[in-house]
Length: 169
Image: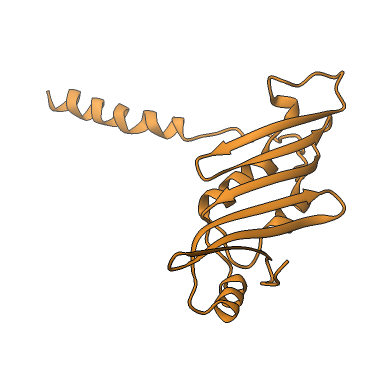
């Protein structure tokens, strides 16, 4: 009985040793490149507008037109809508998957400090009740960011537009 247990123990310990030997194979070289990195560089700012906004912009940049169900070789460009409850992005891609332009609209995002300070300085007793964040991106021109704000002071209401630097438009 002891010999049988020792034999099973020996076999049980030696079999896994053979399983650890792996063959090394050389894989072919793969080149990874980002086609829409310019878009992310233009729309990102020092301060994060909102986590859902950033996530949707990353999805727009990572979207591959050639893998989508709408792709056909006949068309020169594609317009794709991306939706979340906080906003939407309409993106136009060429047939190679390069992002040409976007139109973005988001509600109630985190405002940059420059915008908050500009509103506080010009309208000290007013409160921001609603805000809309608009981004228009064009390849080669960059991104134009605009904030539309609704201000209230008691029964009075005022609507203003600012850019990302806090300059009134």
